[in-house]
Structure formats: C-alpha cells, structure tokens
Image 1: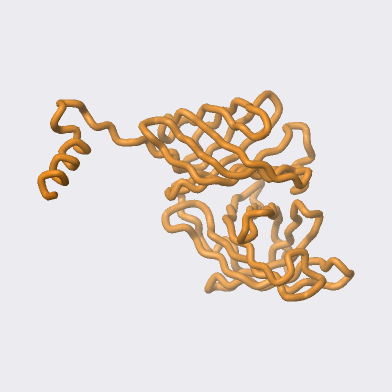
Image 2: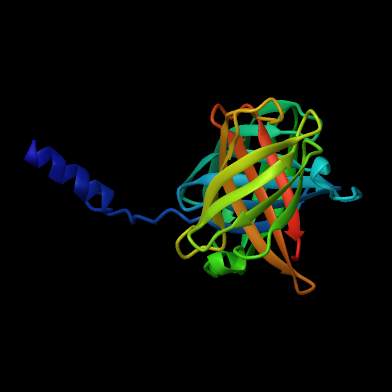
Length: 246
C-alpha cells in the first residue's frame, strides 16, 4: 500500500516517465466580453469554480428584466475550462446548459456556451476582482433595488452585515426581508442571503435565496448588482439598485 501511494505521488509530480507536470490554469476572476454578435456578457468565476454570468442584448435598456443569468460549477484541466449548470433566461424559462473555454490566466477566456443551441463567446479579465470588497461600501443609507420579476425593494445593511428591508407586496402591501451579507475574503464581491417573510405578500414566501453581490462606482455613485438563487435552483433573482439617500 505504501509503495503504491509513493508511485502515485511520483507520477503526480511528473516523475517516473520523465514528463513535466504543468499546473492547471486558474479561471477565477471577473470577465467582461460578448457572446455572438449582439449579447453583452459579464462573468464571475469564483475560486471554488462557481460561475455567475450576466448577459443581455446589446441594444436593450439594460433593466433587470432584460438580463439572463448563467449559473453553474466549473473545473479547469490544463487550460480548458468546463462548466455545467443552468441558464435563467430573461423570459422566465430555465434550461440546462454548459460552457467550455480556453483559459489565458488573468487575460482572456474564449469558448462556447451551449443552452438549446451553441454560441461563441470571448471575455477579458478585469483586475478589479483582486480588490477586496468592503462592507463599508454597503452599510448606511438604504439601497433601492429593482429586480427581474418586475418587483422593487429597499434594503439596509448594518455594520455587522445584517440586512433588513421590505419588498413591494403581491397584494398591495409589503413583504419583510431579512438576511446577511459578507465580503468574500480578498475578492471584490459579497456573499449574500435574503429571507422572505412567511406572508402572502411575498414573491418567494418563507424562502431564503443565496448568491453574490457586486458593488461598483458609476459616475461617482454606488451601484449594487446581485444574483441570488432559490435553494432548489429553480429560480434566479437578479437585482440592480442605487442608494436612496435619507
């Protein structure tokens, strides 16, 4: 047994047959580009291989309802990235999908996305991924958000990362929201959880959704973009918003 383990380790280190062992490339980062001729694409590939990809038609108004989301898990072998997951389309349909790409680490991804058809894409690395997210950028004045269901909400983030707020209700009232947000260590995004109250006013009654959020400055104004999934991954919520100064 010990001899077998030693031989396996030797082979993994490139010994035994004289071949070199080349480490797998890393696809982690923010990637901005396009798919096909008229679709804008922005992707986050996390260190654990989780993929979050936002896309919309180049000619759209870029409202939340115009966005689709690709979510899945990925791995890299050599310089080839492969991912499988789901495509949450702007029309509400959900389809199984896959992605393959060649990785030029911290430079470029180029490959194909398959989801009821196949389309080529290319995206360039965005080094802002390496700038740690700060909770200070979210706390304080509330955020007014619009989402891809056509709904709206207001949330506030406390110094400890706890989230409170409310969403416009389905029956003319409001739906209470609670949750938490925390920076991903050393990276420019947040992990976020939102829980809907047990009320008929709530779009996702008594459910918790989890995902990621990214804060950017646009013309000096804070912009918050989030993508969250239900526990069974049957539905995605894409939210975009800015500060509501009090």
